[in-house]
Image (tube, rainbow, N blue to C red; front, side, top):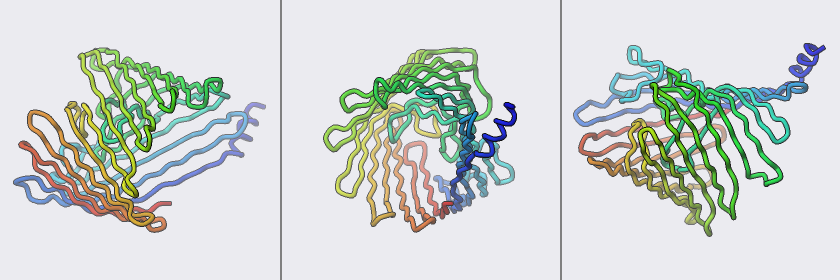
Length: 335
């Protein structure tokens, strides 16, 4: 009987998919090194499979596979997780694969699922998510439970999880318990998080507080983290708003700029000019304030027409130890 109910639920299941396919040509130029051209074929796929009664569960899958071909110098310091073979770098790009069950005010999930903890928009002072060579975050393996107490309002959430964060995208560390509470206070939303990660035989307590809110026409946001082993503080403070059709963001942070893992003081700003209805020009500047200051500017133009998007981008790093330039052009098709 239970087997029959299971098959009946699967028969009423709904499958939803969306994704994109991207082809990009680029070149990296470092001081004293010839230009290293490369081309990239990347995809994005999201699929959600909803099972009917008696399971009432949702199965979610997200993939961001990519293949990059070029000389070894074109791959930079961060190699794809699968490594490079004869000038070809491949990343399977498994981002999420989890099952979610909703029971009234409680959500239960298990598998590989995104867990963004950061509030900052231009930096990530602390994160449990690994990133691939393209800078895309990936989910964390674990089990989670989230309680949304309706008696306190829809913006309240109590979340608990047992995580297995990936180390360098490959080996898994010991289980990491996490507890978080999110609530709204007078127009500002705050979330407190505590976790106890273990890696390489050492354990430490990590606590954080982040939030955002509207102050007039400006969004103010910030987050602060305290790591106890070794003792270290990280954080970010920023503001964002509109000036006509221009979206601006200013941020100061003590965080690790990707692909680095060492935190450093930094100032960042971003300005997006909305052209017509679907075109945008975005400029970003980041200044790393360290022993050897480094400037990281980037400029991106994107034009969307129907299901096709054209992207032109240029960026670089200038400092005492590094001088590099990257340019690329890409076409993305959505489906």
